Image (tube, rainbow, N blue to C red; front, side, top):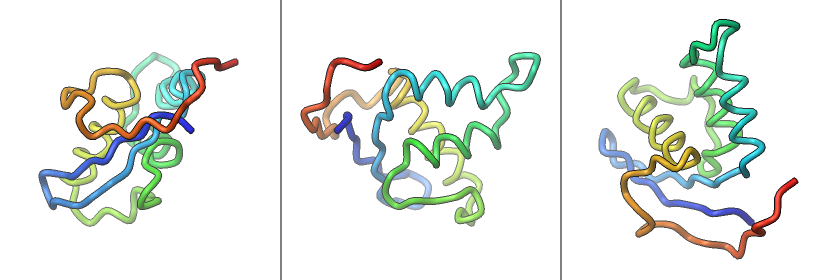
Length: 102
């Protein structure tokens, strides 16, 4: 099991669980979210983050009724997997993850 984090949104105070999918998958998420010019596309990034990182509740873009909530959750989840998480490790739940990935 990989590193997990509980996240409560500021916009609607909803609870989410993020799970780090591993370094290879983070690279694939980043690659899949870019167009041919290297520009990150919001919709593609959100789809990949919701598919691989937000594990509870499982959501799709259309499940959000509030754009502020949607962007906040996607940005927080991406910050978590890319190491830019500003909240530190206070909410993390280490589940004995393997340090070896191939």
